[in-house]
Length: 313
Length: 173
Image (cartoon, rainbow over all chains, first blue to last red; front, side):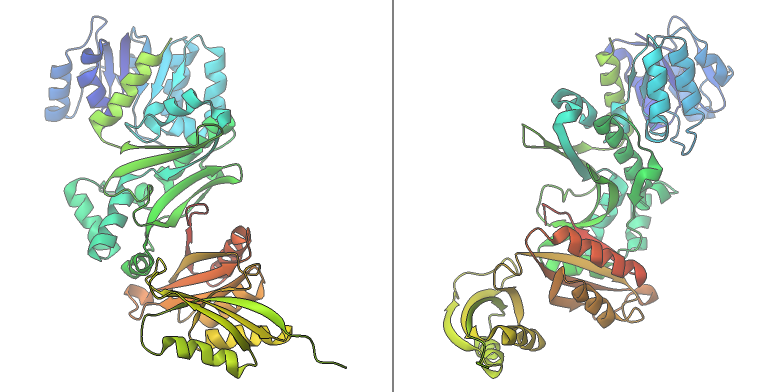
């Protein structure tokens, strides 16, 4: 397949790097200010080197990437809220010209799922978005396999940064600000970790899960969101005295969608440590399924993108 | 008018493993007109919190039973269940915020008033952190199947007092 990759962050770059290994050709790459297009396949190493050294992927206009010759649009630009632009426009452009779309960008399916679904229904192209929930973990593929109507509820730890902070605070008895600074030094937390610690990122993933499980109708506004910024070490101590700990848990049930700090058994399945993510699916006939693994990271998330490309018809 | 007939009641208590604790737990029962029928004190088995479970059967007029339970709690004894059908489940929640300014006893009273839950244990951290933030752990006994209602009440009361609640995950709690 010929891939057009929009977005040259950690995930977009890793897709460009790994595409050949999966048997695909990258015919276009664009970041916010530049693009490179070659119908025979771009020189991945040269593109990545130029991005690293000069901050651009090529000399072209980013808009040219969308008019390139490609089968699959890989949308890996930064997630935006509300109208989910420019990601939504890219998705529209690809589907209206009957091309497939694989998303790593959460915005279009978290904020405008019904619009995106309608575009996909009209298109000969397909839409997939495994990488938007749980990074490398095949959450949506599992839901698809079980059947969305046979999954009664989903819950999980869906943000590695928040989980790293909470598990370090509990283990070391350190204040939130201290651990967050440490996470930033380690590259676990971004310079602006607001969406990670205020619950927004986990809430977007839960909105996507709710859309898949309940066939649309959800956006960030439908999620009851609370973050971890107000959890002091003393709360974690009190939890530990009873063999519990606190995790930022997202829940999708028939009653609604919620993200917030919750008490969980200290050695329970949901109490994953570090940047690990976990998703629990409560299924109608198969009991509880636990899926855990790396919820972020360039290569890990790119593997979910490329797995989606392989699942396309 | 005749005196109301005595009824048999069962209490489940959790005691710290220290000398004199059992005696301390039994005194409020006798002092409030309870007639002890049996005491099952299983020193070998510990609750998940490392305490000793004690089951007490007693006889008293129905009205006095509440006094007995109240006196036990006032004496700092953890009552896990008072007549099994009454308190079927226990849930733990954390409250975080400026607990002193938020009139903590008022919060507890509001939770009890709603009728869905009874506060069986309460622990407060002694050192407030930054911005006078402190944490408290609340253990609630709720009627079987009533955890959802009890947690909703705690949420409402906490929101009113500008406190954060860390709820258990129902089903996993």
